[in-house]
Each structure stands twice: as structure tokens, then as C-alpha cells.
Image 1: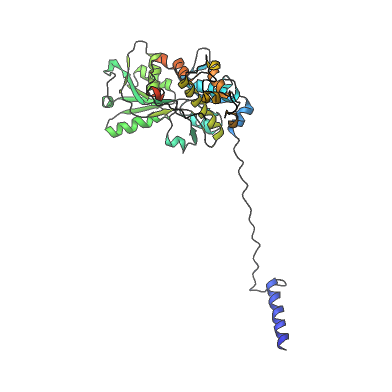
Image 2: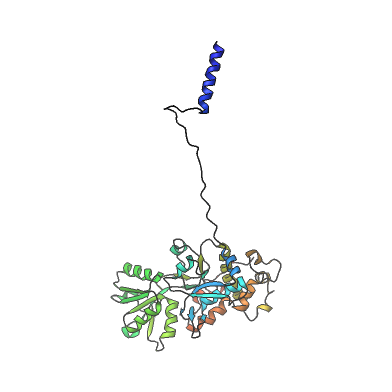
Length: 361
């Protein structure tokens, strides 16, 4: 009898565990748990592959800054920054002229990168923390070390040794959306100098206001002031001051974040131009200097241990850069030396400057 009772209880428990039959008032049946994985976001297209497939580099440049980025009377882009676009195109595509240029204002340049309108930004752009993080850019090596200065008219009592304190009460004009706008605001506030700051998207408008007297002072990178003074002040009436810039402005190329293969190409294009200058390799003698040493042979694709093919480039990629565009010094002398811009910080490290490429090995 006891055995039958135990068997009956076991059967009752088994039935309850199965949850079958009609449910009573106190019975709850949990719905089966379902887990739906979120669809993975598609990986961004590899920018280097995109440029190669397109057969053309989209490069954002200035068109109003002689020496750096300028559109000449025939509509052709020319300048130091423009030649970097050409050098990158030569490295990737084997043809320095395989570039579509996009003329950009200072305010529009970063959206042009993030929207995909351009692949490379080469437009006198300062590398800063916010641009490297919040704006979503990556930067290559600094190609021009600069600093912010001011320009005013000698007839107004300014001279090359004028100081920031001398602009008390002045109307100061600069580009909107630039580091110079923030620099002059913060520096004047820190020194207790009262100024009126007017900003314009186009630096041509800034300069026209300066010429007309609507602006007492203009401020931007020192190189930019030298450029505009050389082209717009034949009487040498404008003065640039103070002698020591009020900021650090490391200028160089930028591109959208997380495109390391493309970034490596831009970076090593700059380094190849510097290494070539260090070795005295120019656009006119590169064919005779391919085997000057092991580093040159590797860098210009003359030996089996070259590294360019590992980067997704032709073995002679950097040879094409030097042959078609030139080394760093050639580009500098072509565009900036005529403006009176001495090498200074932009000399090779061996000559007392800051330019110091890593070894190609």
C-alpha cells in the first residue's frame, strides 16, 4: 500500500512539472525567452581601396592663400599643400595629376572630411586635441610648423616689434571656424586687453575689410600673413608682429578617423619626401640615387625587401612621389621660399629644425 502511494505521488509531481493540461487560477506559464541580436553595422569601406578603385584622389585645399593653396589665373591649383595632394596621388595611383581638388573655406573643411566629400584635407590645418577627437579626424606628420601673429598698418603706428598690448581697443578680424579665432579671444582675455573681434568665413573678405579700414588688425598663422602681404601689399605698408608668435600651429594633412591603411600612405609619403631631402635625392637625380644606400633602395622599390607592396602600393610608389613632385625641400623652395619664408623650424633636424623622419626599414 505504501509503495502504491509513493508511485501515485511521483505521477502527480511529474504531471505538475510538465505543465500540461488545463491551467488553474494560480498557475503561470512563462513565455519562452527570445534573444534577437542587433544587426551588425557594416564596416566602413577601406579608404585606400576606394581611392584605388576610383582612380582619383579627392583632396580639400585652400584657393586663396598664395604659396600654400591658390587657384591661378588659368584655374589651376598650386601651392605647398596642393603638392602634398599630388604626392599622395603619385604614391597611390602612380600619377601626381590624378587629383580632384575641392576648394574649401575654413568653416567647411571638417564637414567635407566627415561627409566623404574629400579623402584628404591638405589646407593649412592645425592639429589640435578637439579635431583629433571630437571632430573625428586623424592627422599625419606636421608638414609646416607655424604660429599665430597679427598684421596692421604702419601708418596706424604699428611696427614689427609691436606687442599684443598695442591692439587695445582695436577691431580685430579673422577667419570663422579657426584656431586663430579662439587663440586671440583667450589671449586677449588673459592679458586684460579689450578688442572687438569680427570673423568672416572667407579670408578674402577679412582682407578687404582690413584694406578699407573696417578692421584695424588681422590675425592668422604667420605664414598666411606673409603670403597675403607678399601678394597684396606692394608698398610694404603692412607690418607683422609680435616677433614671437602667440600660439603653436602645427599644420598638416588630415583624414577621417580609423582609416589606418590610407593614413599610413599619407604619413609615409611625407616621410619619404623628408628622407629624400636628407639624402640629397631630388626629382632630377632620383634615377641615379636609387642605390645610394639600403634605405633608399627599399624606400624607392629597387630591392626585394621593399615594404610598399605590404602597404597595398606599387613597389615604386615613393619613387614616383620624388620623380613627379620632388622632395620636401624642393616643394618648399618652389612655393614658400619666394614669399620670403625661411625654413626655420621647418628645416631638417640636422639643420636645426624640427623635421625628423623615422627610418624606412
